[in-house]
Amino acid sequence: MGTSMMIVIQKDKDVKVAQYFNFDGSPLSEGLGVFKSIKLVDMSNFEKQVSKCRFFSKEESSIIKKQMNLPISKVTIDIPNSLMQPADKFIDFIDESKKEKLIFINEIEALDYVNYVYFINFDTNSYEIYYNKFSQYDCNKECLKIGDIKYTTFKRIFHSNLSNLCSLKEYKESL
Image (cartoon, rainbow, N blue to C red; front, top):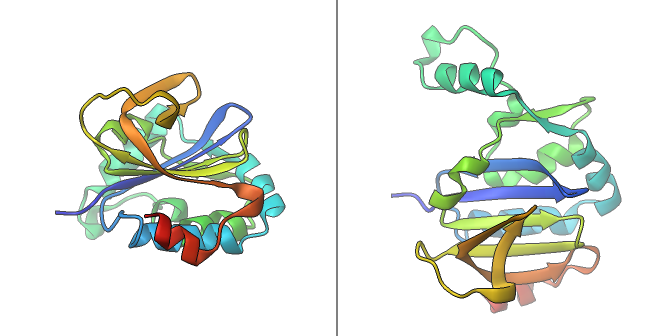
């Protein structure tokens, strides 16, 4: 069984990315790759790239999801490259894209079922990791809040300032 994860990016009080990944989502596995990617990007360029992100419409998402579940020989549309990225390369994909718009399936509805959330929040200049306890608890300030929604099963296990990320050693030690 995989350890699921989601990368969520918020900018201007708007969720720009909510990408689900079904395997190796623990902070010291794929999460380590995500952290390294964030650490290495030019944050001002990455923020500009995030501004180009948007979601497919519900109809477009439905068509793409159906096609992705077909055997490759039966696929009749081009599956967007944005959907085929592994978690540890996802940040690099956004950062290095030359496209005018980056379009993703909005997978935020799967949030309650993931083990870990990797949250890049340009509004608060923070990078946070949350663990899903799969039961409600009194989380106060450690609770995951995306937009106006508070997710009370998620506990914050890591926090760092985006403009001054901690070292890789500090990241590993904090987990």
